[in-house]
Length: 123
Image (tube, rainbow, N blue to C red; front, side, top):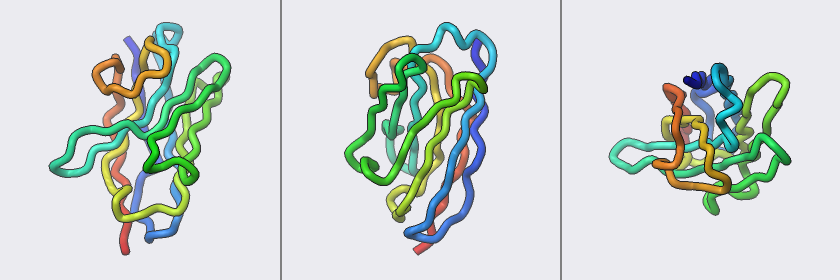
């Protein structure tokens, strides 16, 4: 089993920044990729960013490219999402998740999920 715990969500004004954290515990060796997803009310869960534990290759959704940065700390088994220039459309519950499949953006390819953290952007 793998356990994930997100933190760092909150209320921010449009144009502001937030940094989300995801701590991973358990059978972490079974994970190759860490991803961030988000889900707004009435919408499907969508891919935001992902990073490989080994090598650190990163992948971003076009909607966040240039504004969000994903990073990892292998020693701490933690993944971060730095979100800058936040917009109203970024408002959602953000989830971190693990996958054994490299370079995947499909939620169904991710095996374990955190409980989510709310990001609210005020205009």
